[in-house]
Length: 246
Image 1 (cartoon, rainbow, N blue to C red):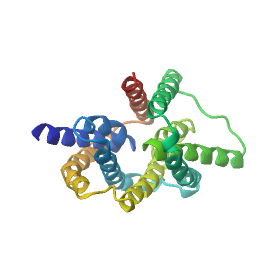
Image 2: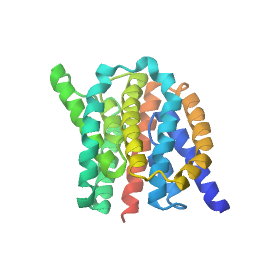
Image 3: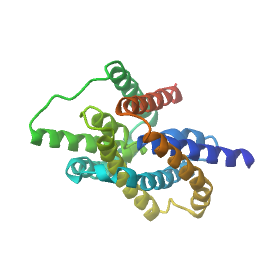
């Protein structure tokens, strides 16, 4: 019992810290820890509850940078992609999916870390909007299949040449929108049980403290350091996915 409590609290603290610092990553960080103590049916809704809490807690600090015209294509694409991903879930091999996504994340993040100045070429505004929507759609698909809506928009935003606040505003508003829809869907489906709520009461203090610490660190770093932290977080997550399927 004590071990389970420590794992839940420790996972929440780690997930909140990463989310507060980068604007994403609660699930990528906390889920592997929580699965040591909880079955997936409990860990999945717990991740979403803590993710939404962390996102709401840190949102005011980057509210000034949120531009709905910039975020809308990602959000619309993501909301369209979620139900498609959910429908595809029964036909997707979890091991193949996780391993493939891990390889993609490790490869892309390693390339971007080696070339820190990589940027997308300028293109027609309508083409750029369409591309943003496709990235959001891909994020929604991954979110519907495995709850991993964040990696694609996060990597894409890092190639735009935006400031760290502008970048974070895009993928945090995207993630919050997708996660909120996922939470409502799980609640309607009966997945947010009394046991999940009880676990959330255990985890939320760690999430809140971790997010507060992460947000303070975020304001102390520059855009170059922020970009490296984001890429290293995704690189570690991708490597962890690959190791889990071996």
